[in-house]
Image 1 (cartoon, rainbow, N blue to C red):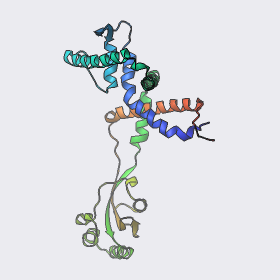
Image 2 (image 1 turned 45 degrees about the horizontal axis):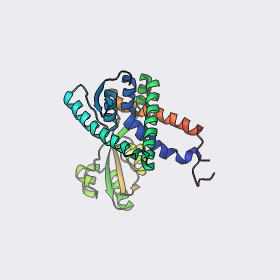
Image 3 (image 1 turned 120 degrees about the vertical axis):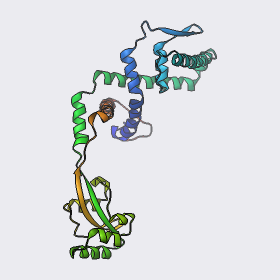
Image 4 (image 1 turned 135 degrees about the vertical axis):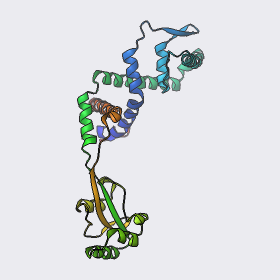
Length: 279
């Protein structure tokens, strides 16, 4: 018996791809189109092709087509006629009976059915405004601070300690940085760009947190780049982007969470056996 943990990550990656590229087109089609009484736009060797079939074809090719535009519709119809003629020819030659062709058709059938379930799930349980605002608050509003620091980078602890001793004696940090630093920031008095703590090496971030604004850290700090003498110049709150500018991204993220929760439920209930796998 396969334990769910073993294949969960790989299966989730596949399902995410299906959710991202198939959910929205299928959801729109499921809500807004039906096959009953659908308009037939062209007939090929007696088989009628409807507007909905054309739309599904366009969506499967990841294309957006306005069927109200005569030129766009004509181009899509011509392309679909070619696909239909090849398909009819394959059936006439009994190629639909070939084992690999049958397997490919069955795989495509499973994909369409899986996408349909996902689309219906999102129609039945739409993302709410409360979910959007909560996600925005948790992920974007409470994001902590950014820090602007100056840095004198040297190649040894001895040199770094000597610089700190000069600072203790009243020397100017900027002048020392321009004179002593080995990195390209020296020409700016060691000034660095605004950074989050997560963007800094761990030891550097710890020193920044332990240092007051306007002060320099009282000991040398080592990272993979060398030895640092650090000064904290400013801090500021990280301002979140406007909700409306990232609303679509939030909705997509919440939909992914819904799909993954449903996937996990199905996975836990399933009996899955993989050849060669043991307990």
